[in-house]
Length: 104
Image 1 (spheres, rainbow, N blue to C red):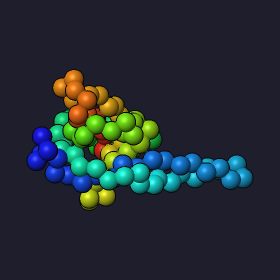
Image 2 (cartoon, one colour; image 1 turned 180 degrees about the vertical axis):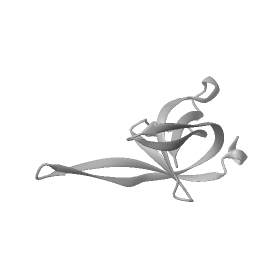
Image 3 (cartoon, rainbow, N blue to C red; image 1 turned 135 degrees about the vertical axis):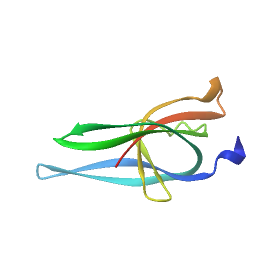
Image 4 (cartoon, rainbow, N blue to C red; image 1 turned 135 degrees about the horizontal axis):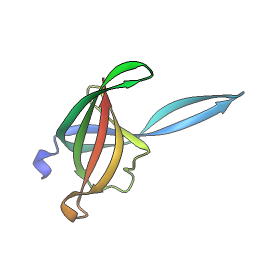
């Protein structure tokens, strides 16, 4: 598995700052990790009256308890992957399967 972890990813966390009634969102890098991409499905849906293309992408990464659905991955091309779910890969604790969503 180690040789297949060939994509460099940033694990990022969100911070929300509230000031005089409005909120602003920023993301910061927690760490950089290696992962293997597993493209899954794609579909289109309407969001805010606009047709949006959405693709699900699976990732295999080394086990890390910091990877949770409230965070995101950003790859070397600055593509943002929203983390949807995290489960052990093949029932073990060495790797994780991470389901993400990328919007275009």
